[in-house]
Structures are given as structure tokens and as C-alpha cells.
Amino acid sequence: MSTDTGTLYVVATPIGNLGDITRRAAEILGKVDIVAAEDTRHSRKLLAALGLSPNLLSYREHNREGAGRKILQELSRGRDVAVITDAGTPGISDPGHHLVALCLREGITVTPVPGPCAATTLMSVSGIELTRFLFQGFLPPKAGARKETLLELAASGYPVVLYESPNRVMATLREIAAVMGDRKLVLGREITKMHEQFVRGTALEVAGGLQQHQIRGEVTILVEGAPPRQRHVDLVAAVKRLRKEGLSASKTAAVLAQITGEDRKEIYKMASEL
Image (cartoon, rainbow, N blue to C red):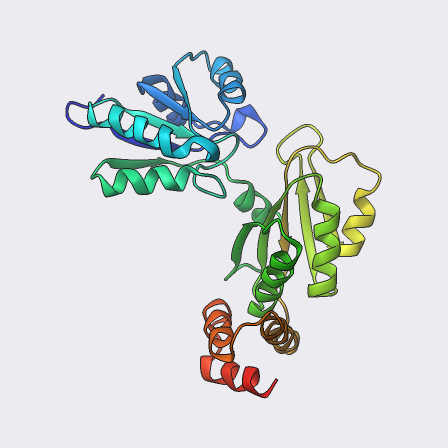
């Protein structure tokens, strides 16, 4: 396809329903010299369904340094590469962004081939006002960092999009309830698949509704934003938590001002008084 250096194509693939693959994505995947896939076994099934059998290369979090260098070598030789994730758009809570950054640093052309994304798919049917929102993706694995992150997100007052694994979703819902109270949320599981389900309510209500189901695969959660009065309460809670964790008043103000958009001096004053 290329006569000089190759092109890296960032190709979105279905998050469940194979019918969601775009014609352009299928065309690109059939033309490139190499497809870099997060899980080659998983991706081989998708490619076989499209009647394709390209040269597959493993590119995932645990091998991204070595695989990234190999991909860069292939691109420098004029070969075109498509990077795909297990589901959705590469670079969204997966190592694809490292490869994109590496290619951009080396002057390699990076071309997006847009398509499915779990976050925007859930948002489109949420019924929640989304003029502004925060995308968190996966929360930190350690309990303390998870609570700190949730407090920061709560203090922003904005709707928040989270990804979560099936084995941690119930604990995460309880943590959301503890930090964000009775904010409404919508949880999507098996999105675009046969057993697609959207569960709406408070975090505890949604957790109760999920108890009768065996959760398979990652879930996507969208928590609504807080009303103005609740935003102040959440901000105070976040300030208290960060100060308790040992952050200085100045650092607390810097972190929360960046996240919430609130006045840094006012947050610093609050942090100093607390």
C-alpha cells in the first residue's frame, strides 16, 4: 500500500456483534501487511468471519516494548500495519496509545478507522445529560487508590464513565455507593450481544439487580453528574480524603482544580482550613 514508510491504521472492531464491523475496517484489515492484535486467538476468529487470514502479530500490555519496536521496523520498511484491540477502539484503556505515540515520534503516519466503542455506545442510550463527562476507564486495583480516584471523580460533579471486570463489578458498585451516594447510573453488560442488558438505578439498586445474573465479560458504567449543592459536598469530601492521605494543601488544590475546574485558590483555602 505504501511506497515509503508504512502507515499505522488504528482500527475499531466490534464490541460484540460482528455485524458492527465497518466496510472500511474490513477493507483495511484485508489490505495491510500485518495486523497487530491484543489477543491473536480472539482476533483470528473475527478475521476468519470476514474471510481474512492476515499476518498476525501479538501486541499487548506485557510485550508492548518489544512488539512496538518490531512494528516500527516493519513500518520503516514500507509495510502497513493495522492495530486492533479485543473489542472496540484501540488506545481506549488498552496499550494501543503507546504504539500510536511511538509511531508519531518517529514520523510515521497514523490513520484512524473509527467504529465501535463501549463507552460511547452506553452513553448513547443512557438518557443522562452529557454536555461534559469524564472518562476514567478502569479504576486502580488497590483499594486506597480506588477510593481516592472515586472521590476525585465525585468532586468534579461531572458524569463519569468506568470500565470494570466481571469479578470486581459488585465491589465497585458498593464503592460508588459509598462515595457518590444515591447518584443514578446505568450499567451495560453484554452490549450488542444476544444477552445485552442495561441496568439503571442507584449503585446499590443496580448491584441488587445483578445478583441473579452471572456476569461475563467487562461491563461499562456511566454515573450521572451531581447537582450543584451535592458537588460542593463531594468537593469537601475529596479535599478531606486527599489531606488525610498526606497531600499538602497546595497539591490537593492543584489536583482538584484540574479535575473539577473549580477555583484553585478557593480549594486551597478549604484545604488549609481543614
